[in-house]
Length: 289
View 1: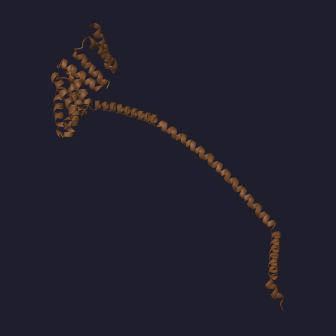
View 2 (view 1 turned 30 degrees about the horizontal axis):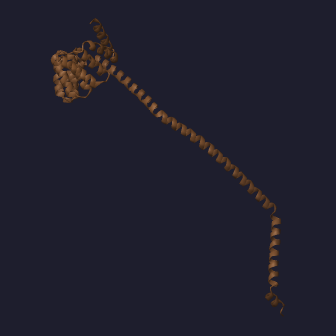
View 3 (view 1 turned 180 degrees about the vertical axis):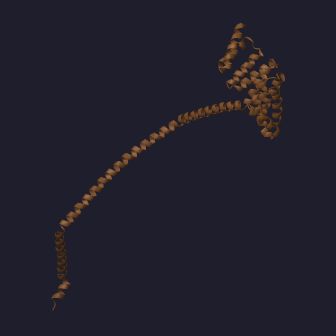
């Protein structure tokens, strides 16, 4: 029994440190020897909730309540779990049952007021917060929930009264605000880092392919254009040189060409005239007196 108590204590330490897997292993070991102990089922449900295994957690918490429905903490944990599952009305009923068994449970009181605000039941939230503040006047979180409900309910009297209290606790509120800003900033930075890593890992293959194609096309076009321009320049130089040679030859040979053309023309005319003169009809006409 002492060993089981030690294992349970170690499991509780793991749970408090957020090591839910180790805590669950310890609770399961204890459960093997005491399967009908409601507190162990409740702790298993809380550990499963920490691991995100909500359906299993709900089964364990309902088992704990079935074994002993007088454990207020079981209803408290069940209310938190149902709130995580967005089953707000059931969560509210669980907190009500917890407060019925343990009216001084400040966590359940605050959680109930917060849940009333979340479900937009602001008049009920004002009543619950006012009643809770009467028993715990220095609970700033309850005052903040009351202010939130009063703003939405347009309750001027409650707001005026609460402003006096908040002014007296300005330093503490500033400290809490600074802490929230630091936490919010850290969350934003973490989200940006995770987003950058996700985009990098997701888009890296596509970026690599795009970069490869871009380089390949650039090199291909560069080589192709270089070759094309080189051939074009060579062809242009050849044509230019050929034209120059032709012009020079034409200029140099122009007199001889003219003379040759003249001789060819004269000879053509003489042959034509002689052919005409030798035709029988023409010859007769010419010879006949």
